[in-house]
Length: 87
Image (spheres, rainbow, N blue to C red):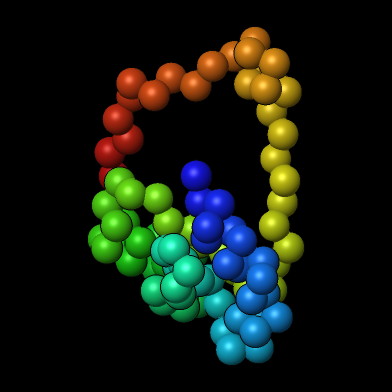
């Protein structure tokens, strides 16, 4: 999930940083859909335009963090997808 968007961001990182310094980008597919000063504004646009469909929000001047949850990887815990998140 979001492999296309992550790959696009990584391949165009320097170009995006020059074009949108310090901005939060909303990326869908291989296209920047918007650049915003705050993550709240970026998430608002993404939620409005894409609903429950996935989209990527990244800040141009921030290195992405890799998060590892060994309990999920090893199958000790599982994510419960039956809960609905309401805003």
